[in-house]
Length: 411
Image: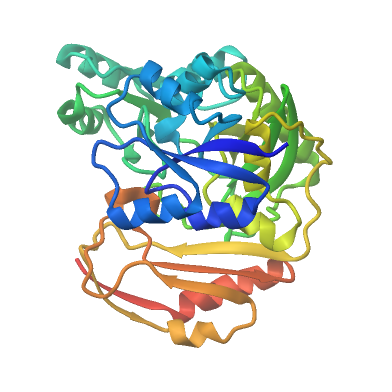
């Protein structure tokens, strides 16, 4: 039987071509659009060539569910946080396998998630939720109770956007007060790093897991390159580096988090940091991670895009443990400094193009373009992707890339 899956499309999600190439002709796709800003005509034309397009912008959940039901979809999936709640609402109305509304709220809202994880005893940072309707006196009182240094995050969001460090109560108030009235914020204590020997990689990593009928199968441990200030991602590599004695307790921690959030059928992405007090859970993303699936497919036969869609339409998943990897795949992003205003020049990319370890080089910003660190991970200027034989080779290659590539900015 040929299945049809509804996929929420977002400008920050994967390219539609990326998904179609990875699921092939195994199922049909209904592209669900929901954006007050709309989509450009070129994107809409492309989506129509790749499947059926349904624009639900402005519709109530009941109206959207009726329209989607007429297309006889067998499953629904979102690859970005923006649509998790809408997808859950439609799935509930259509009887599709997806997050319940309660679970969707917990994975989409950082305050709800942190509270659920804390209640379940999952190790994590101390935290202080800031509701969107907080008053000035309440905010000042809360700021005095926070343990500094701390990390301030929007209650909802992804891609490291809007995440900043705060060093004092007055700094916290100045950051939050202008934004009162929105979905709120989450303040967390800053977690110290483990001073590992290999400083070319970060002391945090992610676990890519497939949850089918409530049973979690862990597919990969994804390593990370050090963050660019304040908390922007610079890429990842697979397989990651984790001491063997930590593997079992870390995976058990992820399973406790999955149970606490009520995830039953989804591919999820869980971020964990190694601290002097032991592993601490940073957050759980209730959908496929942004870059790990691409890196994983370069070193293994695991296709998480296809798996996510198959889960959505009700196909069971039989896990086989962490995926065996051939070599080490990587996705490295060069970010501008926080002081940069405009990209003035790029040098050295041509010298990387002929290296056999590098498969893809992308200039994400052209000279003359504005750069803005507040865009989070999306502020990247250069992306380099490829595969090397082992971690030592990756360390040497990353060092070479940073040495060869020169990025000049206007501050």
